[in-house]
Image 1 (cartoon, rainbow, N blue to C red):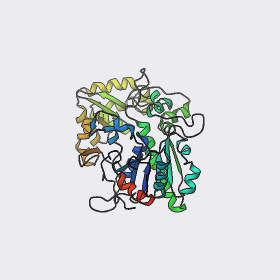
Image 2 (image 1 turned 30 degrees about the horizontal axis):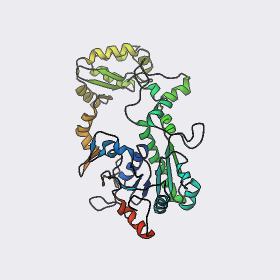
Image 3 (image 1 turned 90 degrees about the vertical axis):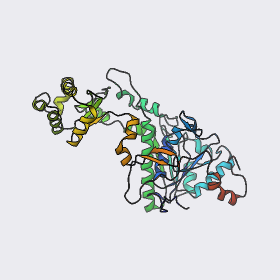
Length: 396
């Protein structure tokens, strides 16, 4: 296989030479495989005849494809296979023979029903790393049930600690469980590929929304393990630290993330009330937690004379954690966002940049998100020639 090349003609990324067959759809799997593609893997996105449904999750649309799909499917080549039919499954088997990684998020039992149980995959493709992203895994009390981000947030306790004190449980405003599962899947695949260098064998990587949602419950789970108390909602305030929350200023809101006594002393000094750090009610984090409301009122009084963005910059430069609350448009336009390469543009495509920077083999954006079945001939042509007939794709 010839790896994708950068514009300079050099192999692209740490995973150059790794081929990934991506049978996943919606977000957790595609987010995982986009990261693999950003770091150089040759990702072949296999879609059903109707396509990944997120192509229609809009508006907004561009050229008939929704932004939702565009945000998780760059650096991939797209083909269509009907895996419900034998010719499509035969072609998948041929693709797997040349692959390093298989990523899928079918409901457990689907691949088995199509003739691809783990035992068969391990026997036919012993070097293949097979990653399954599912809701709950294949067994156990919830095994085999379908999984969805918002449902996982509800079931795993994330909603119970998100929202204002006294308010209703609230979904996190982005698909955090899908994305965390995609990230954990990338980690598992990288571990398996690294181990394969020693053993010569692939293995099964099992990533579930349920497990990954529960893994995000820090520090709430740690608190329960220690004191047995079930946590509730505290709005923007931290359950273990104070002041660690949003406060109003004369212009905008500021988030203060004060993690120790030194930072607190620096904060109140810059606010012109240094004696607050010496008061017994505020001298330690435990005391500040116990007197959170009085502390909040005292800080809010001083913050009335400041603008959030200016004060946050001043505090950060003094080593005191703070940030003005920003909206998505503002952060995308921020000069540091551009400086860090966190907005990328190529051939009319705009997207978020790769967050992990490697010095010798950096990630890159080489391909915009593909049109449905865009690379059918490029990917399937050699297999069609080999097989001399139809192949289960719409053109076959």
